[in-house]
Image (cartoon, rainbow, N blue to C red; front, top):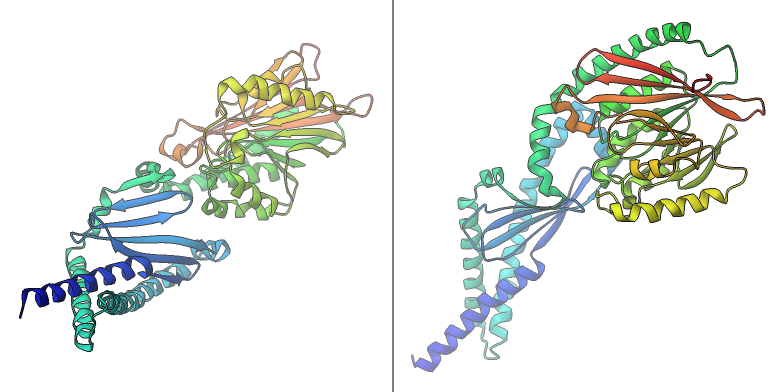
Length: 463
C-alpha cells in the first residue's frame, strides 16, 4: 500500500471521527418529562469532563464528575406549578414520583445512548462523504470507527463518573448562594412543623391578651372600626404566612396590607409558596419589594382577593397610594442606589400632591423612601430593614411592620429574630373620614412561646 493510499485512509478516518463529533455536538440532546418537570439533556465535547445543571433563571451548578472530555448538561425547561405543589404536599404521591422518576431516567438513558450512537454512524458517513472518494467499504469503516470511538467514550464516562463531585460544585447566577441555601435547608426545615404549632398556640394566647388590653386601654364602643393588619418581609417563610392568617382571623382584620419581600429571589419556583394566599377570604393589598420580581407580581395578580398596588387604590373610604420598590421591575434583589432615593421620593411626592381629595395611607417597601415622605401623607406603612417601629415625624405616623416572616427561612436558624405584625385601628372622625386611632405592635419570639403586644394610641391629647 502506497503512502498516498495510507494518507487517504487516515484522512477518511479522521473526517469520520470529526463528523461524528460534529453531529453529536449539534444534535446530541433529548427532552423528557418527569411528571410536572420538563428537562433537556445534551452532550458535547469539552475540555474537561463536567456535568452541568441549569435552572433558569436561578443559574447553573457545575461539577467535574468524570475524566472523559464530555460536557453533560441538564436544563430545567418547564415546570407545572400546580402538579409540583400536589407532589410536595402529598407524601404518598411524592414517593410514587421518586420511584417513577428512576424508571424514566433509565429509559431516557438507553434512548439517548442509542441516539448518540446513531449520530456517530451518520457523522462517520458524513466524514467519508466529504473526501469525495468514498466507497461502500470506506463508509462502513468510517461509521464503524465513529461508533466504536463514541461507545468507548460513553463507557469511559460511565465507569469514571463520580456523583460525589457535586459535594463541592461551582455555582453561577443566583445559585452562588446555594451552599448557604443547602446548609439552611438541612438545619432548619425540620423546625417548621414545631414552629407552626408554637405560633398557633401563641396566636390563641394573643387573643386572650388582646381582650385584656382592650379593657386596660378601651378605644370606645363603635361598629364603624376598620382594622388593617400590616405585614412585611415574609421572605418565603410558610410558618410566617400561617401566623399572619391566624392573627388576621383572630383579631377580625378587615384587610391585610403587605409591603413587600414576600419571596427571597423572585423566581417562578417561589410562587409555589404563595398558594397559601388562595385560602384567605379578606382583601389583601400587596406592593412589591426588592426581593420580588415580575414573576412574583404576575402570580400575585392571579390570586383571588389579592390586589397588587402600584399607584392609587381605595378601600372603605380610605385612599391608598402604593409605591413598589424600583428593583422589583427586574430580577435583581439589590435595593435602589442610595443616591437615587431623593429623586425617586420627589417623584412620589409630586404624584401624591396631585391627587384629590388626598392620600390617607402611603404604602412603600424601602424604609428610606418612607421616612423621606414624612409630612406629606398622614400614615406611611413600610418594611425592608426588618426592624419594627411606630414613630411620628412632621405630623405623619410611620409604621414599620418589621419582618412578619422572621427574616424568612434564615430566621429559623436563630431564636433571636422575631415575627412581627402591626394591627391598625381606623375610626371615622367628625367629618366621617377614617382616622388612625391606635396601632397594636405584635411581635413573637422565634421558636419560643413568648410574645409582646404594645398598643400605641393616636386619639389622645399627648399624641
